[in-house]
Every structure is written in C-alpha cells, then in structure tokens.
Amino acid sequence: MALKMTDRVVDGVAVVAMDGRIVLGEESTALREKVKSLLASGQKKILLNMDNVTYIDSSGLGALVAAHTSARSQGAFLKLCHLGSKFQEILQVTKLVTVFEVYPTEAAAIASYSK
Image (cartoon, rainbow, N blue to C red):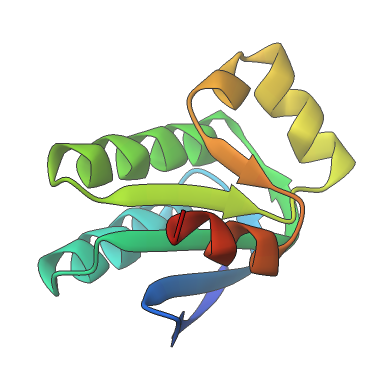
C-alpha cells in the first residue's frame, strides 16, 4: 500500500496527515519530497500526523530524520503527533525520541508552536 499524504494549514502550521506505510522506496522518497516542497514554499512549522501510519522500516526512520535535518537547517520546526504504541517504542529503542518533539494529539502539537 502506497503512502498517502494530505496536507492542510492549521493556525499557520502545515499539517501532513499520513496514511499507510513509510518504507524503502517511493514511500520514504515521497515523504522527503513533501517536506522539501513545504520548506521550499517557506513553511517553517511542519507537523507530521502519524495517526494512520501502519508500519515504518529503517528507511522510513531515515526519511524522518532527513526531513527533520532539512527543516532544522532551514530554521524550520518539524514535529510529530499521534504515534502508535509500536512506533513510540521504535523511537525509544533507537533513541530518536530525543531528536523529535512528539505530541499525543494534533491539537497539542499545533498549540506547542505558539508557545
């Protein structure tokens, strides 16, 4: 199943809702491209809503880290919300939970940008 991404802007934050798997191949490439295009359009606040992500592999994690790095290098902020328990576990095991700002809900993540 391909990764579907829909983006919208809520209170100045680009929210990208993802649905599917973030795996090696076109899915992880699509994620990188989506973040690149948001940054290119001048968006500085990006939120990835992982609510419907069913699976992520090491390549998917790499794409997230690459997206985070690109955002940081351009003075933007990339945050995550709605991680499933499995994904939360993966972030803890890989210590990536210290890299990303993670929020339980989309509303909490959006609110965090205005602090």
